[in-house]
Each structure stands twice: as structure tokens, then as C-alpha cells.
Length: 211
Image 1 (cartoon, rainbow, N blue to C red):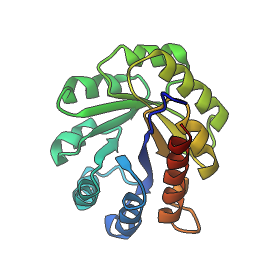
Image 2: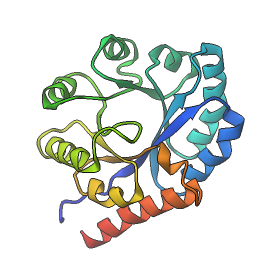
Image 3: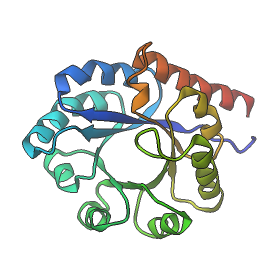
Image 4: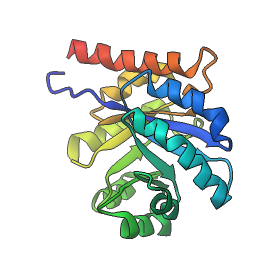
């Protein structure tokens, strides 16, 4: 544990369709931990509505010292001045995002189905890889831990290890990942998102203290 470097938090929002309704929860989450990035997801395909949501929420994210990323919409990034995009998979959207946004903006990628895909992504100009799904119900926390640990041990490109429960945060933080993703279930916590994020941050702090 002597080489442990405490990861920062990466918030993954639920799909958002009403910025005004979502803003209080986002503000609370940002204030409860050391948040590096917020991945904003949309519940609407309408481009105009998406632009309004980003413009309404971007100031909150910036005030919290975090980078605002949007999901799977590289064109929107350039139009609203977001920090970058997160793309699911290695398809045309990923290639287009790299071509249009790098090096000025952040491009991250997830939904990598195996180690070969992860290595292909890592050989590109990508800023990070994500292990674990954006929503619960995909790979298990143990699978995410195994993949993130493998990647962090062998490669220099940063990675995000996604947790969907507070109980999984500490183990994932010990994987060597630079970021621990907090999935949308943290926003749905019955105790409030601030409590859930603060517990996640506490797990990181305890791990650092023992290192």
C-alpha cells in the first residue's frame, strides 16, 4: 500500500431531462467529495433540450472544480463548451470524437468488452478507460475490480472503476484506478446523494490513511 495514490471521484448522473429539478442533487453531490469529473447523461434525444441542460448545469460543475463530460455526443461538446465526451464502445462515435475533439477536449471510453478492446483503446489518444457499466446490472464489482487492477498494473492511461454501491468503493479504490466512478444509484440513495457521496469519499480517505 506504500505506493497508493488516492483516486478522485467521477460522478455518473442518471439520465436528465430537467436541469432545474436535478440541480440541487448535483450541487449536493459536488459538495460532498473530491469530484474530478461529472458525466452528464440525457433522457432526451432533442439537441436543443440537451444544450439547455448543459448550459444550466455547467456552472455548478465548474464551481465545484470538476470537468463536465457528456455521453456519446461529441458535436454537443463543441457547441456548449463542455470539457469533453464519454463514448460507449469503439465504434464510429469513438473515432469521430478523437478526430474532432483531441487534443483540446477530453475523450474517454467505456463498454469495452474484453482486454483486447481495452488495449486497442489504450493505444489511441484517449484520456481514460472506464471499467464497469454506467448502470447497475452489467458486470459485477468483482469483475470491475479485476479489470481495473489488470489495467492499472500494466498501462499508463488512466482508468475509472465504477461502483454502484458504497460497499464496493474501497476495494475499487485499491485497484490502482485513478478515478472511482459513482453510478446513478448514488443519486437515488434514500438518505440523499450527499450522504452517499460523503461515505464514498470517507472510504477513500480511510484507505489513504492506512497506506
